[in-house]
Image (cartoon, rainbow, N blue to C red):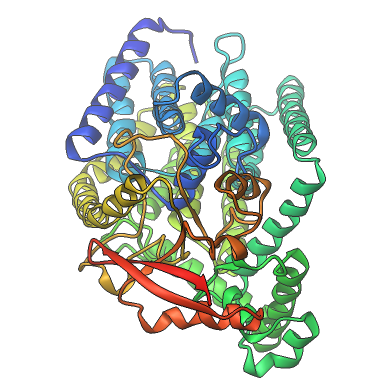
Length: 594
């Protein structure tokens, strides 16, 4: 690969990003994908406790402190959303810029740029508008793998940039980076395999060592920042909650009464723990020990009902089906077995790399071909292991699975570009095929985005009204039922989405006079701080205060008895009176001691 003039490549990449940004803005608006990102934004911005917080629970401390600093300087901007969008478009710029550097002829530069653009619009598409920090982490990691494989020594700084992308991804979402890190390591190893010399080995080993050391330092800083006893206690609760609600289930009460009695959990407390309620913030006795015990017990029951070998076999069946299921996506949150066009493009690129090296020319050798075949086998084995792992974990949302496909696509794309760098035309023909497939899926991607935007606009009519009500009654405090915070349930219009917020619209980072009664944020020091500001020592007693109210979907009239039963089991008789109905969906209740 020869050094080229970089100014045209820089300009072309900027134009490509501009086209992508304008296209996305033309077809829709930006949203936080999930309510998780909304809560994280509230913590960083100060909307949660009244002051921007550096202890943002889902991120590592250094990047939380960095983002919260911007909120301290200018409170009225949506800095968290801006940060995620910059990260995503920056990755597309870096991929395009490096691909253009590799291509020698203008027509090949245009082809590479069009592939990056069409792939971004037709395949990644909706992720640019429905922004989620887990996917952003995966995109950063995938871009790093691409830069590592296309790095030209003494020509560019790909290794340095890749290092910072991986570190940023780790700080942003450590679990997702660790999931994709094996693929990054495979990319590093493939780079050495394709060069196969001592100097390259030492460079790759040094890069790997620096990455591991940096991640260890970052984790050390994070743990030190969260080393206070109250944060350690909360972290235990958070990990236990994750195991129970993300990977296990809550066993039925009547069939397992002896187990719950041994934990000191009565029927009303059990109701709080269930997936149907999940308002665990109400009861301080529901701690890390209780949640861990329930998770371990559920795991044992499930293992007895479904042995490991049976689960592994079922996982392989789903995995194989997902590889060759080319059904046209009909919605944004596709089912866990529909990954078209991701799987189609991956298959094209695997076959393309194989064909490109199976027909060696004078500058090729059988050893080189065998090394590439070995690289493909290694890559496929790694991806298979990761996919089986997440399928067996019974949790494979697109914010996790799509980044796995993305890093695989970029690794294969990088290998093709390396081959094309030796003046071979065949790899560009493969890229052309992948580009056409990506282009053909742009109309469907737009259809998916339009449908999702319509669903979210229906949702906003309800939740904007609810949040306006909160703001108009700033002297009160509102405790929101967990599932009410996610959807209007029976009051949802047909096709209505679950709760999220639009980026850069109705930005208000002032203290919010409401909180959830459950979820991953409760029982943290930030929850204590928020309740304290409202004048409450805990959620259970706070809900009974004269200026406190409970919010639940208005159609769930029969479901309000759970709160009466809960307080009765605590020795407190309460009345529950409905104060008003908001947007024909949400009921505001006054829960008062008799």
